[in-house]
Image 1 (cartoon, rainbow, N blue to C red):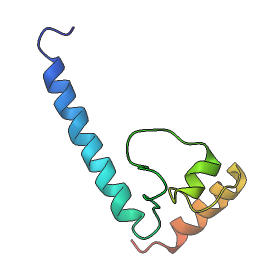
Image 2 (spheres, one colour):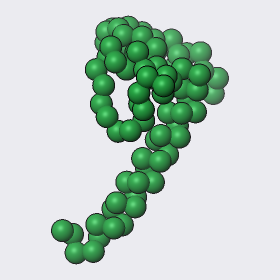
Image 3 (tube, rainbow, N blue to C red):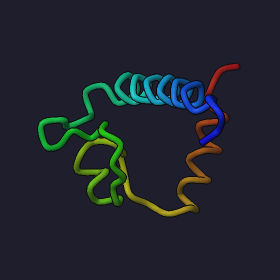
Image 4 (tube, rainbow, N blue to C red):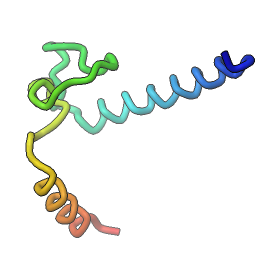
Length: 78
């Protein structure tokens, strides 16, 4: 495909994937519900399923997300 560079690209993507999965497990500790489904297998989920599996805390709208982001930005110590 890319003249031997496929293996390098795959290795880089695998490393990024591993880091992402570790970050999800760390930051969602105690909230994930892996017994319902292996939620870290690369599938995508709609909002209802993501909430059910513990991948998100709340379903809301863009306005709420912006307000929450601004609030969190003000409360984080630099």
